[in-house]
Image 1 (cartoon, rainbow, N blue to C red):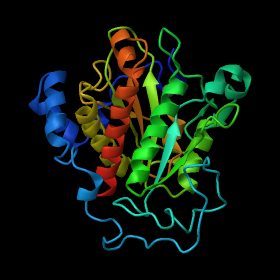
Image 2: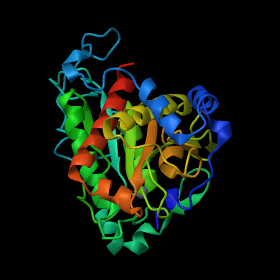
Image 3: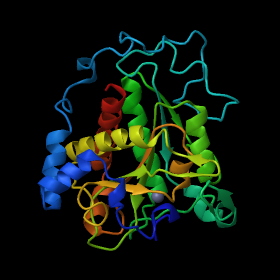
Length: 318
Ligand code: ZN
């Protein structure tokens, strides 16, 4: 069974599609053709080294390097601060993403399996109340989604930090369970993140294959108000999907999103409560043997992280 935030899978919401998706739907009848369109639209720079990108620190209007030091994000889990950090970015960092903050949210937690009563407690996600967190899925051989998401998250952090970004995690397996989905959202918010990615793998039927990126729907209820993030999150998600195709060679999902690799959801607390651009990615289907062979390959996970890093870089450097 997949995590509750993605199971059972919901049908694609055509009303939420943007121009790019509509263009794909109009131009290409099959998922394979959509795959090719993704590849052609995902930009020319995927094989270029980071140094080929224009210097972020030299760009007009970007924040200057902070004057006060902050703890290294690479060695600590992001802890909620009382207010948005006045010193975004890592002091002294250089590279095209210097001064940019990316929050990486490894889906679930390996300890969730031992803390089911805690993670089953309901939290307020604005639109309704929902379980704090879930265990996530696993391959048939027992490689868990929580392990997978932490591994890919760490690879992604390394790639982003090489470009100068400040990377914060919602957790690093340093706590017994969770965080709850509402806290995961707040960590990104309080970090003042320029982009947030929540990393998952799905648990669907055998034969269901491929990745998809989940975008926030327009919701306004209780503490949830996504009006300001729907547009930028779609931009972020489309870039990640395109780069993910190029880096991994994987096709978009054949069971969610009509071959576009995109889905829009209004039932995810992690998206509903976010005030900063945020997407989820389901990297593949752990319950499909062919996808599982990819997800359990460290070589493929590195490619997956590269695709995410390329997409995030493209979004932040736009
Ligand atoms: Zn998950």
